[in-house]
Length: 216
Ligand code: 5RP
Ligand code: MG
Image (cartoon, rainbow, N blue to C red):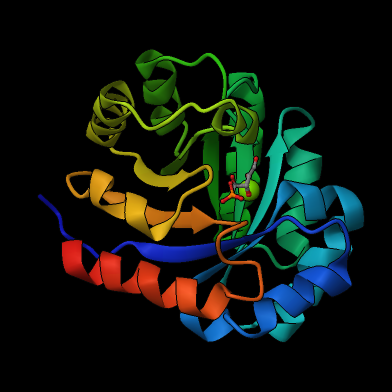
């Protein structure tokens, strides 16, 4: 198995840019990837992408826009504002995926497919054929709040997705104690929002890093 060390990614899901900048300031050195979360992208749009790009020119920057239509226009907006990666929802039409992917290639960026709702391994193969290299395995906030945990079926699906060639990031209420569950998965990034974007974020980032270093 390929044991490339997974990245640690902070998701900034604040409802305003000032709060998001405050959350990332202390932990920027402890993370590899900074995400303009869906909540922040709705609140502040591409202005938030540009502001974070200017402050953090060397981090990988993701716009978690969960794009579902108008692939070319929306992808162009995010990449030209400074995103390296953007997210496209699994429910998007394959032509939307292809349009977003074409723009990503023009900018030297990448598309990540957000695996929400219904999707199949056949869909995953189509995404790969379209040039997409990454996907995000996502336990939804609402599912987590309803007590849904990580199951054997999740792990099996993650392995099947890896087998299609997609690099997989994992998210959804993740805490450092969860990392061991994914030790046999070829993970690209572990994405944490609420666990990292708070007053205790620096200590939690170090716990994540210890766990990642222990298993990879
Ligand atoms: C929600 C998201 C969040 O950014 C992602 O789930 C990480 O946040 P948290 O760790 O708080 O769940 O994309 O749709
Ligand atoms: Mg997110």
